[in-house]
Length: 221
Image (cartoon, rainbow, N blue to C red):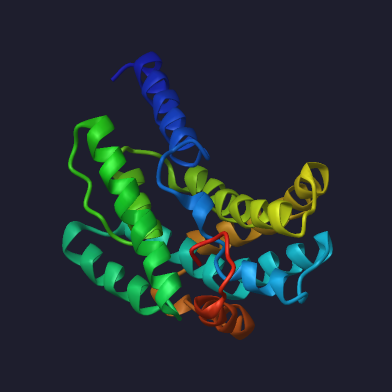
């Protein structure tokens, strides 16, 4: 393959990543708050700093970190071991809503991607199916993994923008402040193994359980 053609194919792959992680990609991620809605409703989270600290904790020690590790492991797996990683990702969901969140987003991603690219894409938890699909499309892991962290962060910040409300400028300030954390944790996840999965964000897990009984809600989790 010539260098010119290789560069063109790489550029097209990068466009695919931008499409997958765009708010316009129809997987419904805007409908999920990851338990953040109940924390805002109860007054536990009310400022930009609160949102930043909440998300940073998830990226370092909770579901955000685990998603990055699962994504990385799915990327490096074959089809035989992918099912085991998928089952582990499901088992890590601490509540019914979080379980439905990761599966619904993963199935929607698989459905849309299969139809657009005319290649079958199996529905699994979102980080697993997107990680494996990135491998199939020859997208460098070191490129896509930080962007997945960015997408995870941006989705949660959008919850704060709408519910606190933070406002667009403060929301972008929070996003920019978390750039170093996204990069740091993505780099760490590149070298991580499944034995590095962890979770010390128990309040976030409890929030996802409490959200199941929230009567007035905008989000599904």
